[in-house]
Image 1 (tube, rainbow, N blue to C red):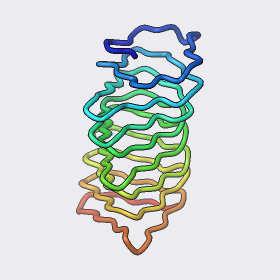
Image 2 (image 1 turned 90 degrees about the vertical axis):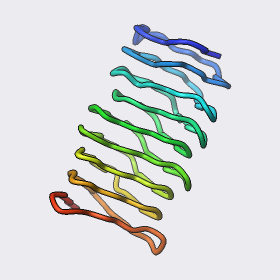
Image 3 (image 1 turned 135 degrees about the vertical axis):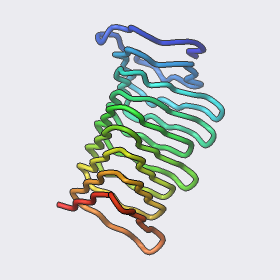
Image 4 (image 1 turned 180 degrees about the vertical axis):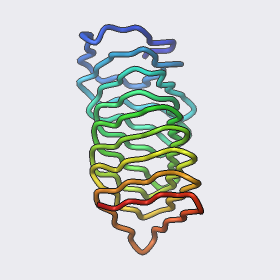
Length: 171
């Protein structure tokens, strides 16, 4: 367990084992790598404050929170709340589970892998780029933001809400 703050860790550092109960109060100025899956448990918080968190998969359980800005290398599976409010890169895919919420506000978020949304994605005066495309089975809400999709599939249970001032580009 990591019960406290992880910060200013060398980009050469690796943690080769599983990290059950990953429980940082904050992950900042980070260059931290795990060779195995990382889970943010219910009621716990990960604050990304400009660094890089590298793991094959970061799972944010229902009731867990990931907040901030920086880089995540690996896939993100979210059943809780993820809020990006600064420049953020997900070098991997995103699965937003039913009940999960992704909020992108005030800056750009780039997702290089495919995104599947079964919950809620909201952009608020931000910019989100789905370089790997988006399959939407849930709610996609844009409130004056820029939304870029290399591929967009909206299935029967999914919907998009855009407002005056929104930009939507599908290439």
